Amino acid sequence: MIENLNDFSKTVDYSLINTLTPDPLTSSDGNDHSPREVKSGHYVSVNSEAIENPKYVIHSKTFFEELTLRDALAQEEGFMRMFSGDLSQLPDSMRSSGWACGYALSIYGNEYYDNCPFRTGNGYGDGRAISVFEGVINGKRWEMQLKGGGRTPYCRGADGRAVLRSSIREFLAQEHMHSLGIPTSRSLTLYSSQTEKVHRPWFHQGSQSVDPEVMIAESVAISTRVAPSFLRVGQLELFGRRARKEEHPDALSELHELVHHLIDREYPEIHEANLNPEQKYLRLARTFQSRLTSLVTNWVRVGYCQGNFNSDNCALGGFTLDYGPFGFMDQFDPNYQPWTGGGIHFSFLNQPQAALENFKMFCLSLRPLLQNDRDAMLELDQIFSDFPSIILAKMHEMWASKLGLKTLDLDLFDELIALMTKTPLDYTIFFRELSKLPEKFTPVQISFYNEHHEISILDEWQQWFEKWIKMIHEANPIEINATSPESKQSLSRIMKEVNPKYTLREWHLVPAYEKANLGDFSLIEELNEVMKTPYSEQSKEVEEKFYRKKPSELFNIAGISHVSCSS
Image (cartoon, rainbow, N blue to C red; front, side, top):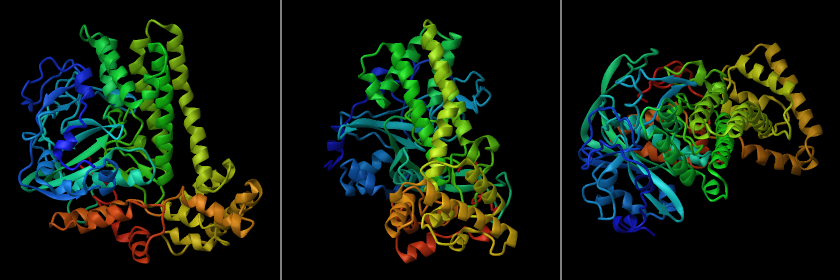
């Protein structure tokens, strides 16, 4: 058990700092808070900026237990001080300054430079996220990063702060995603300032506007997110661009160093394999392809939309990263997009294509390392070409599992998507009710948003339902063909392990952060508890509160049905 900060300090192992190259202009004292062009090096040293008068909001008891951290540590002074941004009083073995990294921006496979104030791409990166710890706990490496920890050279003139509203959303979403069984960064702690506020664009009460209309003062907060690393496709892309363009003499060697650090951090099985460098790069590409295709398939399975799936929000470890304008879908819509600035390219059923575009940038970034090996280049091209067929096969397998079928019948599936699009229904509730394998379709209609439908639509649903049941009876193995009480119970259990009962909707989150603004954190705790067991049947009180359709008056309301980037 890690009882205190001294125990915690014994786990440190700053592999990124120890093995990669700092920016030559990085400040020795970490006082590096103004926007500037960072032309080379993998990181800059930067002091986090402590929030004023921090107060405890929540910590992940589940994750504390996994890390063998004593639960009460979260509210003890030294621990609170560190994870609210003050690194000045840490044990000697720990760094008194953190670090931030640069990365490139590409949107849907297109390189962007205009978002960088210098128009070079050398000013984009961790603008308000500062890593403050890296270590090995119970044989597993973790990096801890303060989101809202203050300005860095990549801040592009912003204030470097996060607000309580968005921090609550990210804290709860990360732990919920972990409970759904989907790879993700994790939440450690969340502290808010009792006195410090910043202004953010937001919406009028009840507004249906797409763009924020007002500036509001919000309490600042720092959440600590944790992952094996925070290496992103955009990071690899930055060094790949520099090597491709020969922007400085060390560009290719810095790309080489970064890729080998990535393999060591996120793909130890490749690191330890007896392979030459080119073979390792190709194995990396195939393994990342496997992780990324599985990740996005599982997002679709649970109704999650990343919203802003740029290359800089795509973790090289193949897990969910950066919960900005995310959303769990209420009413099914293939084009569902929670972010007002996202567009169709990052919409719900376009996420496989968005993943392909990020994978394209990943492969492009590896090419300078393979430029002297024509066969390796051709193999990398083939790995990229395989991506669409691999993710399509995984998507088919996933849809089959949601429907309780061993293999997907495409005609049945196409019919279903057409009916789901035509009939306003709740995505999560629909599939959970199907998982009960009802005798008739009628019970599934509780997922419909409208009480009254044309007879013809209901007839279409009934016909589809009968085809589906017939297919389960005839196409599934006898142990799960639902023709006996035992096989029906077995299939229902399997389907419920795929189709969650509870997902974290935006209209759940809004009351939680509104109460938190008044100093009441009870609803955050309640949501965290409920969303920790999303596949389980819970109490009748929980079911009545959270297993229900989105109230009609909340549709099209800004900040609930759609959110701005500051979310």
